[in-house]
Amino acid sequence: MVITGTRYQRNSRLYMSLIANAIKLSATEKELHVLNYPFRTIAAIKIAKLAVAQLFSEKYKGIGSFMITAGNEESHRLLR
Image (cartoon, rainbow, N blue to C red; front, side):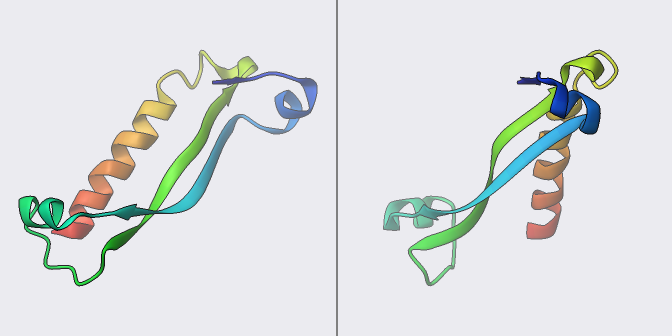
């Protein structure tokens, strides 16, 4: 997504919106992934929007992929 419109172009370079959610797990999924978790749902944070201002799209090319990869790696590190 590329941000357009003068308000965002003047004030923002990057934009990320996160939402809270929950992932429902079946007994089969818990068994398949060897989860010793007593609840039927797991709290989750999801990326709702991720954007770079059009004026900076070349300079920050790939930043969205970087942010997703870094977040994924950090979450795996924390789960070890």
